Image (cartoon, rainbow, N blue to C red; front, top):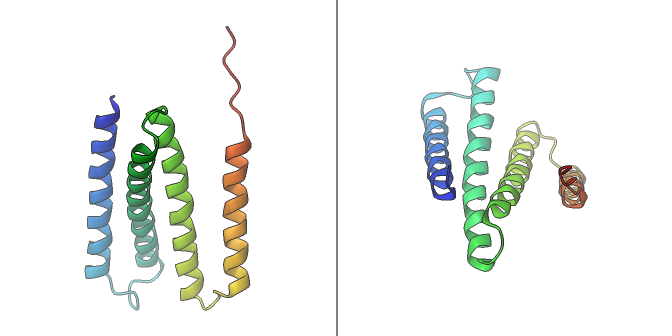
Length: 129
C-alpha cells in the first residue's frame, strides 16, 4: 500500500468517524440512553479527533520536513493524535463527572507527556542479519 492510498483510506475512515459522531449527537439523548450512549459518544469523538489530529499532524510534518522518511511522520502523527484525543476525551469525561480540577488536568498532561517521552526514548532494535 502506498502512502497516498494509506492517507486516503485514513481520511475516509476519519470522515466516517465524524459522521458517526454527528449521528450520536443527533439521535441519542444523554439523559435516557445510559452508559451505552455515553460509550458511543466518547468512542466516536475519540476516533474522530484521533483521525483529524493525525492527518493534520502529518500534513504539518510533511510541509516542514520534506526530506525525512514519510512513514516515520505517519507513525509519529498517529501516536500524537491518539495521545491528544485521549487527553480531550478524558478531560470531557472528568468534566461530565464534576472531577475536572487544575491538578487533575495537570496530572493528565504530565502523564501523557511522560508517555510520549517514553516512546521517543525507546530505540528499535535492528533486525539480526
